[in-house]
Amino acid sequence: MTSTLILSAGMTRSGSTWLYNAIRIVLSHDPTIKDDLAFGWVGDWNDLPERKHTLIKVHEFDGQLVDRAKFIFYSYRDIRDSIASSFRKFGTEPSVKLADHYIRMYEQWTSVANMVVPYEDIVSKKQEIICNLGKMLGVTSFNASAIQHQINNMCYEGDGNKNDVYNYVNLFHKGHITDGGHGTWANFIDSDLVKQIEVFHREWFERCGYSVFE
Image (cartoon, rainbow, N blue to C red; front, top):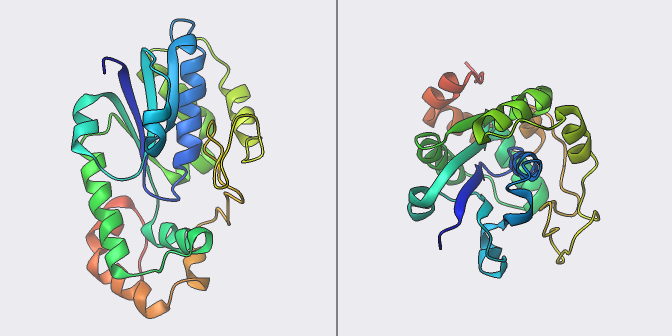
């Protein structure tokens, strides 16, 4: 496959769907790309049309995809919030093992990403991120405010084909956002488990600027 590959990677429940759509829409504003762009979830790749440019959303690190990619974007979040959100949305059982996995994926993706986006910036600096995406991708003609508004109005029920779980175009799930706040893990993760995670990964929390219990 000779298509130019762009990866929109992200920690689970880290705003990765927002990032994917921001990349997708920015790319669509380039007249040389918009009509020759395929995009979607990595699991649906074989069903995508062959195009000169391909944008794929992915969570799990894949060295073969990394080796082929021209651009790699990655979003992350406080793992306590990611774990709590995964539990609310998918029923994923919180555990130290899950935290270990999220940290391992973080280390692998951030070591190769062209641009790393914290969840907090997705919440508060959307237009700045969109502008930075344009610079990285070499796309100059777009309205960041309009793109932000467009993504804000997206949902599972929006335009495009969909299965019972997600929309094939924007990749939003049914009831995609479960809270969106910071520190919501207190109501969904056992406090002893939270402390274990904080002890095991204290260095990561401090490196990323997240506070932990003393």
